[in-house]
Every structure is written in structure tokens, then in C-alpha cells.
Amino acid sequence: MIEVKNINKRFHDKKTGDFYALNDVSFTVSDGEIFGLLGPNGAGKTTLLRILSTIMEQSDGMVIVNGFDSKKKPEDVKRSIGFLSGNTKLYKKLTPLETMRFFGSFYGIGKEVMENRIEHIIDSLDMNDFKDRIIEKLSTGQVQKTSIARCMIHDPQIYILDEPTLGLDILTSRTIIDFIKGEKEKGKTIIFSTHYMEEADTLCDRIGLIHQGSLIQTGTIDELKEKTGKSNIRDIFLYYIDQQGFLDSGVVSNAI
Ligand SMILES: Nc1ncnc2c1ncn2[C@@H]1O[C@H](COP(=O)(O)OP(=O)(O)O)[C@@H](O)[C@H]1O
Ligand SMILES: [Mg+2]
Image 1 (cartoon, rainbow, N blue to C red):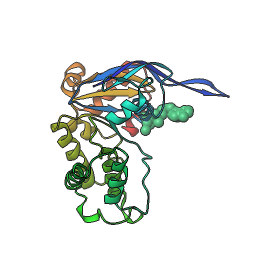
Image 2: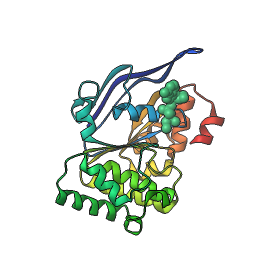
Image 3: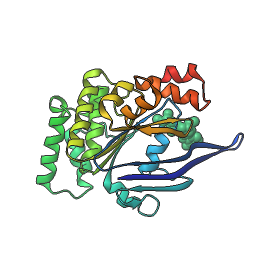
Image 4: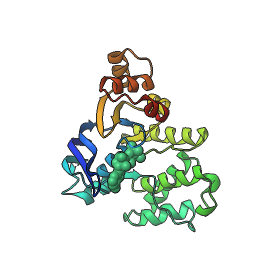
């Protein structure tokens, strides 16, 4: 479970003063749920997911991940999660297989358990063709699959995925989406961010709409359709932006 209670993230700029990248954000993600965070560029998605992953600290408020307070027990949070970010680091001279064994060794996983996990990951992310090729020779989609594999090797209970399918072709995206669905079936909790509306529609139990640092709405897609009278997430999003008086539709509708 993830509990986010009234968090702010304040950045200071010498010229312009304080800037709130997150503004009083609260929500929960229940065990076994897929929660999608939707919002245009600059909305605060990456900042929020970094805070959940303890890469960054919130300025105010509280975050509890898997029962651990992110400020007091960051190591316990880290062990509970797999975090995929846009700049997940990989060693270019290692193969995907070596990458998984290398990162897996940090967690003290027994050899047999580790090899079983690796087999499961290779199979479900369709990595057989390139598992023995060094990373510098892989395509973007193959590198992204390897980044996901690297984050999942310790079999975390919670996945935090920042735009896992950004810039990928539809087949690679589909494999990743099917992988996320499969992990949910195993009882994992998943929070991910995306720009892609259809992806959220097929994948999420609940979504959160984020804009200019505020979480403007959360709910199931059906609930939000009913509340707004709109038939798709894109229109739902624009409806709430209008409601909030944020209308800047040129920017928002291009990004979403
Ligand atoms: N380290 C930082 N210092 C100052 N401002 C930042 C920093 N990181 C992010 N921001 C700002 O916070 C806002 C939200 O950014 P981000 O979380 O990356 O949005 P998203 O992932 O939704 O595109 C943006 O205006 C961005 O410029
Ligand atoms: Mg981002």
C-alpha cells in the first residue's frame, strides 16, 4: 500500500523565489492495485514518483510505502519497491543477463531463486533474443526492457514506473503492458505515470489526474466518466482542467 498525505515539494530559485512542483497532494494506492498518474509535461509526475521512491524528499507531508515512512525508513522503502525512472543506469558492456545477476547480487538472493526469477522476467518481457548481447548494441525498446528487468530482480511488492512505455513502438509497449498486468495478477501493487490515454484505460484500476503540481481528481475511469459525462480520459482530463480554471488548452491538449 502507498499512502501520500498532504505533500508539497518546494524548489527554490534565486531569481523567481519559491516554486511548488507539488501542491498538497494526497492519495492512496491499495495492495494489488494499478494506479495510473496522468498529466502533461511538467505536471509533477516524476517529482512525485521520485519522492515515493525516496530519491527525493518532500518539503511537507508524509509518505508511507509498504508500511514504512519514507523519511524515517528509506532503506525499508527501497527494499519494498522497484523504481523505473527515465535515467535508470545500466552498464553498457554488460548483457541483460549479466545485468540482472549483477543487480540481483546486491540483494543477497540465493542462486536458484535468482535464476528462476531471471527466467520468469526474460520470458515475460520477451528478452530471449537479446539476453546475451551487450547493452550498447541494443535498441531503445530492448534497453527499456532491461531497465525494467533490473528494477524487478529483487521481486519487490510495489512497482513505481515513470513513463515505462515512453517513446517505444507498439509491440514493445504491449509486452511491457502485459508484463505489468501479469505482475498485478501476482498481487503486486503498481503506480505508473503516462501520457498515453489508451494505456491508462486498459491498464488502470484507478487514475489520478495531475496538473501544475495538483492532483485534481482520482477515481476509477468509470467513476470519472460518470461524474463528467465524458466518454474518454482525454475529455475527462480537459473537463477537469476547465473546471479548475486552468484552461490553457493549447498546451494541455497537445501534451495529452
Ligand atoms: N530539481 C528541480 N529543481 C527545480 N525545479 C524542478 C526540479 N525538478 C523538477 N522541477 C520542476 O517541477 C515541475 C514538475 O516537473 P516533473 O515532475 O519533472 O514533471 P513531469 O514528470 O510531470 O513532466 C516542472 O516545472 C519542473 O521544471
Ligand atoms: Mg516526468
